[in-house]
Image (tube, rainbow, N blue to C red):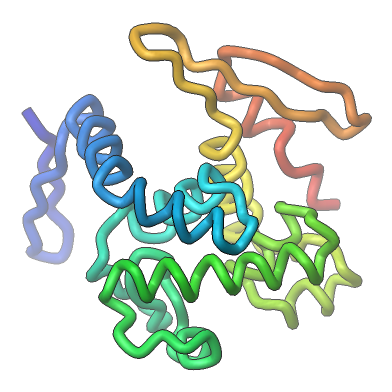
Length: 190
């Protein structure tokens, strides 16, 4: 059974957590070949692209944000145009444009995935404003934590999920506790 939310007179039926997880896995599988081939073509890790898609649109090819970002990778119209995306709702075009954009951000930020994600979420101007560091925007910091946790998640069918990451001192941490991942992924905003 799902959960029901009522807000401002709107009734939403949300899938139960287990169902949502299954839906996400099926949607990832649906786009996996496309993500793999485009990622390989541009030298961006496919698991990283999947993590971005999961948190940008939850694999909804018709997703549109309040800010106007569209499609699987939630491309802003100017970004879509800059990367030659004519139909943002076409999965292949959207992923192609999003992966090219991620590739450029990774190059600009010397393969620092967290800075690339900060620029993807808040814009390159925000990263520049904060001296080349992750902007002190709660939404952006949470976004980075979630995307990086999904990227680092290693799934073993029928077993506990294992997470691997580096702490602030560069020490590799391996754990099955997702709370630790969220705690250590992005440093203290101060």
